[in-house]
Image (cartoon, rainbow, N blue to C red; front, side, top):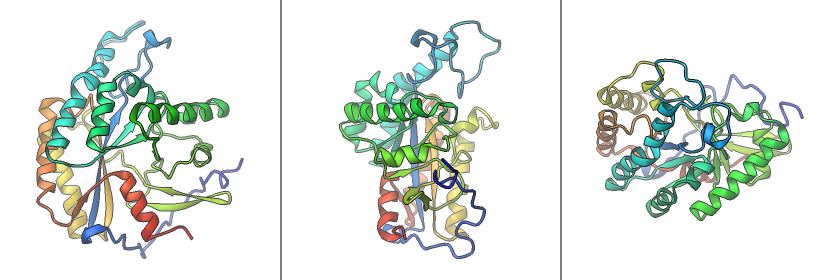
Amino acid sequence: MTDEEAGRVRDFVGYGRNRPDPHWPGGAHVAVNFVINYEEGGEYAVPDGDAASETGLTEGSTAAVKGRDLGAESMFQYGSRAGFWRFHRIFTKRKLPCTVFAIARALERNPEACAAMREAGWEVAGHGNRWEIHANLEEAFEREQIRLATQSIANTIGTRPLGWYSRYAPSLRTRVMLLDAGYEYDSDAYDDDLPYWVEVGDRTQLVVPYSIVHNDVRFSRQGMTTGDEYFAYVRNAVQCVLDEDPPCMLSFGLHNRIIAHPGRAMGLVRALDWLAEQPRVWVTRRIDIARHWRQAHPAR
């Protein structure tokens, strides 16, 4: 399989100076999507038969741990036991939609959270059967993991996922497999502020790009320390495109075990309340952006 067949030819031009008008609903200038990454329970863990505990996107340990890292395990558990429910209160109180990038095994371990997602009308997109990097998987195993994740999420949520985001890096084959599995869009790209179509052999796939830049991982990696900083960061990003840029979309990634802690979550609350005062902002789900784009800018 060539890169071109997998829809992975590198494109440094994109829309260029002639970016299309998205024609967002209601005349909005920017479409804003908040993504809750639901990963807790799908990470590598010794009790699940893995060689070591996952420590990615935790608060970090002060020393190397042999065997089970009970501290890291507990930080993941906070996400599903407490952090998710803080997000649920914050978003449902404001009647705001969002997207969940869901690890299938994590959902299986928390039926009550699955019920809450269904009741809230949140979009649940696929994020893997486990929290693993697809670029490192063998072809047959990757295809099976996508199949298992799709079926599992359909079982726990009641509807199958229509969007997908791999943990950081997909393989060259991932996009083909997602098309084979019936996905309407994927977010396995960070290269634009608008959705776009790619040719995948004789088929086309809609890409709704994601962002690690506008993401709460900055609390773990790049030195953000307070909720006030997060609020300013979101406000500045949105204000920038409202004032200067052509219409576009912004993705803000959230993690149950990161920004849902009280000292940080207040920054999210302030950001959502500020957005509610901006008439040209459309806060929406990712699937709604994808379907709007499919209608307003269909594949050629």
